[in-house]
Length: 193
Image 1 (cartoon, rainbow, N blue to C red):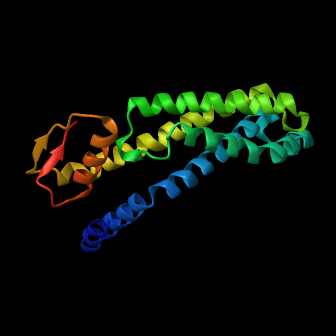
Image 2 (image 1 turned 90 degrees about the horizontal axis):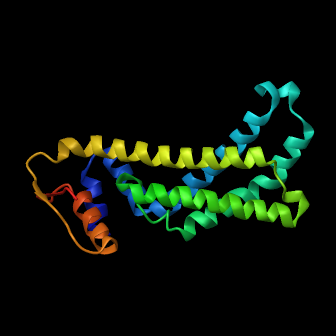
Image 3 (image 1 turned 135 degrees about the vertical axis):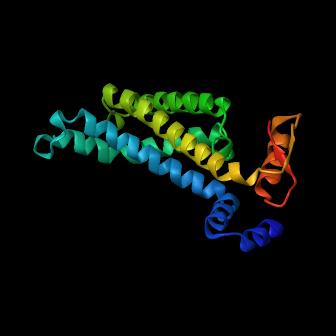
C-alpha cells in the first residue's frame, strides 16, 4: 500500500487520481452504483410520465417515487454487494461480471416487487419496475465498459517494451496478482490473460 502511494506520488495527476480511486475503490464503487441506481429509477418514472412534460406529471407518480426510491436503491445495493460486484475493479470487467450484474439486477427487482406485495405503500407500477431493471443493468454495464476502454487506452502506450506473461490459477488469487503487476508502471511485465 505504501509502495503504491509512493509510486503514485511520482506520477502525473491523472495517474495519482487513478491510484487514489484504486486505493478506495470499495467506497467509490458503492457511491457510483448508488448514483446509477437512483438515476435508473428516476429515469423509469420520467419515461412513464405522459409526453415527458412537467405539467402532465401526476401527484401519484411523484409520491410513489419519493416513497419508494430509497428502498429500491438500498435493495439494489445489498443485492449487488451480495454478488460481490463492489470488489472487482471496473477496469478489469469481464463477461462473468456482466452476467452477475444481470442476475443481481433481476433479483433486486424481484425482492422489491415482493416488498410491494407485502406492504401496499411500497408498491410501484410493473412497467416502472421493468424499465428500472433494464436501465439499471444498462447503466452499470455501460459505466464499467467505459472504465475498461478508458483504462485500456491509458495503458496501451505504457505496455511498450514489456514482456507479456500469462497467469494461470484460481481467479481470486491471480486477479490480485494481475492487478498488482498492472498497477506498477515500473514492472517489466504485461499481463495478457
